Length: 114
Image (cartoon, rainbow, N blue to C red):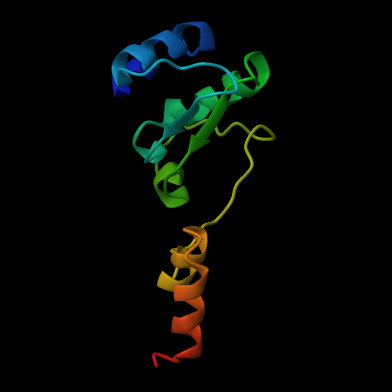
C-alpha cells in the first residue's frame, strides 16, 4: 500500500489504485476510504488535501498517531483541509447502547439483576 503514495497524489490515479489494492469498488458518496495508521505513510496524509480540493465527493478518514506523524521530517500536514477528532474507547455499556441493546445496558447500569 505504501507504494501507492510514492508517485503522483492525484485522486484520479489514487482511487483506481486503491480500488485495485483493496479489491473493492470505490464510489463517490457511497464508499468510506480509510487510511489506517497514516503516520506510517506520511504521503497518505498529504493526499487528504488532494481529496479535499479535487474530489470532495469522496469520504476519507485517516487514523493514526499525531506523535508518529511529527516524527517524520519534511512531512507536509494539509493545514485547513483536515478536521481532527480525538476518540476514546467505548465502555461496554456504551457499546450496548450503540448496538441498540437498551434493556441490557440499562440493567447493567442499574445493577438490578433480579
